Amino acid sequence: MKLFAIAALLLASQAHAADIAFTLQPATVRASQGLGADWNDKTKPLLVHVGDTLVFTNSDTIPHIIHTNGDPFPHGDRKNPIKPGQTVRIPVLTAYDSLRDGALYDHDAGKPSGQLFWIVAQ
Image 1 (cartoon, one colour):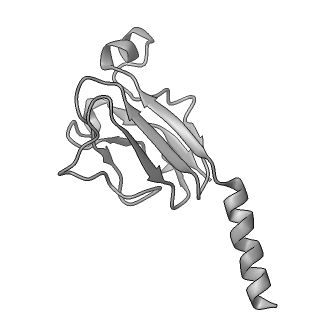
Image 2 (spheres, one colour):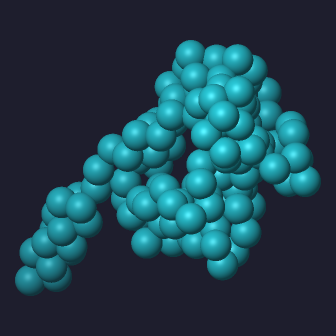
């Protein structure tokens, strides 16, 4: 009976898992849309769920590293930034609300740069 319950929970969690695409636009495009250098609009954070996979495409002209404190996914690899034109798959592991807990940001630019990434993981 316990095995059946565990299997049902695993299937239920997988039923909600999805690939959530996010494309980081070049800074010039973001600025022309009135977004400054932020990666997305604070009033429209990217909504994901624990178990989803963030499919992150860097369409900017420079490499980027997503800075986190481990939530909702591990910090980006400092030795292997996301290169221009590259797409990476990042599993969403924990709940996180950047409106409450603070925005994620580009590791190399630093938080004061304004290169903020607004995300809510439920």
